Image 1 (cartoon, rainbow, N blue to C red):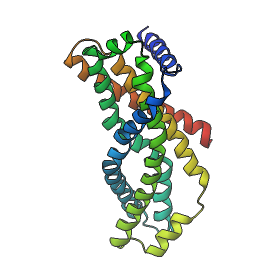
Image 2: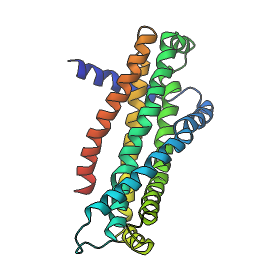
Image 3: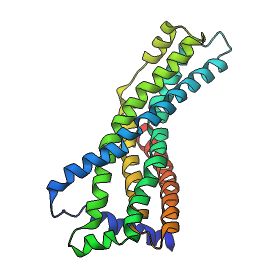
Length: 246
């Protein structure tokens, strides 16, 4: 079946990727470059989207609190929990997948159809490790920092909008944001992020590495990379939630 063939090819590629490279000293520069492309260049769009996510959560929570039995600090608590547990990890990683995953697949796919990967293999270089390992390491390392930033920006955005619009006082929002805070919630999101980062970078690289044909096929590989990465991330999100929270 095609799905088992793909799993076998992916496993074989990952074994090749994590095979000991010939020259370790070239990797720090490659990893630093990938960290800039994957993480630093995504800070702007990520911060903007998470800022408004936090604002929307706060406003929606406020609009649904009609009864006087529900305290106003619930707005801060709900905003914090929503951002930390789900939006900061899952949504941010999906955003990065759409932006970076397609770029990874198209970059490696273009190298494949222009015979640059074959040239690396002929020179005795482990092309899979040279091209893919820096991307995986960079994604796994930098994305947790982006998620931590997203947590702060999201809660700040929700609080700022809720307070400025007058739906809650700064004292009530701050009390809700601090109520029953657990460090494990942050760790839970960071653990998920590490898995999501590996999935995004490895699946996108896989589709790019096995691209065949021309420019049209590169575009198709880029699309498949994003679609399959998102599907696998959502499945992993469900499984990790079952394992870590229940």
